[in-house]
Structure formats: structure tokens, C-alpha cells
Amino acid sequence: QVQLVESGGGLVQAGGSLRLSCVASGTIITLHTMGWYRQAPGHQRDLVAEITRGGTANYADSVKGRFTISRDDAKKTVYLQMNSLKPEDTAVYFCNVEAGTWSTVRTYWGQGTQVSVSS
Image (cartoon, rainbow, N blue to C red; front, top):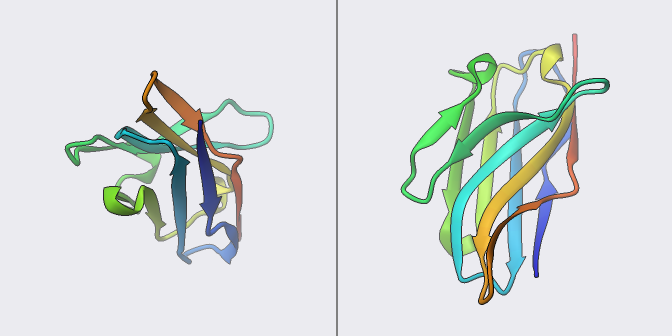
């Protein structure tokens, strides 16, 4: 079993910055694509950014140039540096990790961390 624990969310003024972290634990043999999604009230859960095992990053158009995703496989951690935050970035942010254990490869979700940006 794999567990994901997110941290770093909070309340910030527009223009500010936050850094989200997501640590994976459990019997993990390989880490594949790691990413962040977000869900605002009344909206679907959308991809924010993802990074492959080889380090290739992909971003939603709305966050390009403001957010940076990175990973540290030795620490089994994925980060999301969020700069120049806007009120429309307000949402619950979920970590998403594709991980391989002894028996399977599947995708896991964290519990979510709230990011609120005030105008």
C-alpha cells in the first residue's frame, strides 16, 4: 500500500507564493509520473502540473510561467512551487503519484491541501 501526505497549503495574498510538498510512503519499488491536480468548489478536478520519471514537466496553460513542479526520488517527494498566485488559483490541491509496488503499478491520490488566495 502507498500513502501520500501533502503539506504547504494555506492562505496567501494575490501575488504571493506557496510551496506544496507531497511525500510518498509504503512499499514503493518505482515512482513513475508524479503530479498535482486541483479542484475548486463546483468544478471538476483538473491537472495543474505533472513530471515524468525522466524529469519532463507538463503544465496547465493557466499556470505556465508561474508554477514549477519538481521531484526528489530519493525522498519520494514531489513539490509544486507556486508564484504570482491569483485568486483563481484558490482550490484544494491533490497530489497524484503513479507508483509500482511488488504486485502492481497504479495511481494514488493524496487527501488534498487547501490553497486560498485573497485579492
